[in-house]
Image 1 (spheres, one colour):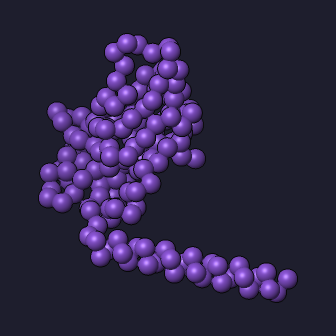
Image 2: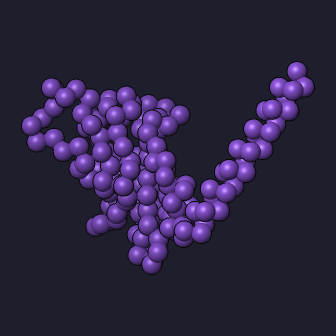
Length: 152
């Protein structure tokens, strides 16, 4: 079950490869994410100095009156990956047209995990095709539903 999702990833990008990463958080950030008080909109992953960081993700404080004065809701958060995975991500990130974005944050047993993906941006005509497919599926489901109600 996902706690927060980046809903526009599937519409704006073509997913090439997925990874699962741990994330380094403060205790209050873990509570806030479990309460659904975060956003992955506009965030991405960068690889620097042999480490991967989640940049641009927002985690609102769990209790607004009980946070440190210097708390930054959009700070860079380190992702916990193996050296091999970080090397693969760094190589893919340097290729033209590819980027790394988070898809969702979810619970796995008692730990929070981030699903990240190497993606390529979709062109406008690809986005239009996605919209057409979605609308066609809705029409089919609507027709099936009306047929079922008429048969009853």
